[in-house]
Image (tube, rainbow, N blue to C red):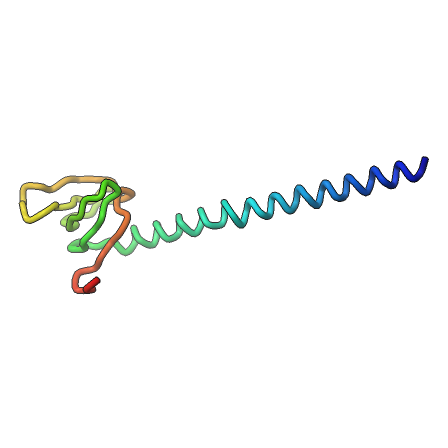
Length: 101
């Protein structure tokens, strides 16, 4: 009888180890990369300045002409009348003037 109890305790311990391993894998495969991506996006938003060339989430290239707390005004093309306000989160890439990329 004591053999069955010891065996049951052993399988419960193994089950706990599996659960801990699954949680650790989820952290390293899902949560940690997402935190790094958010940090990278926050750094991108902090480095934004007037005159930077930007790429938006919709695939348009433009130049920042004004920045407020949560919006930017982007000028598209050489037409001075094509200025569109958009959320900062819509910017996915920034190229500083004179960087030559």
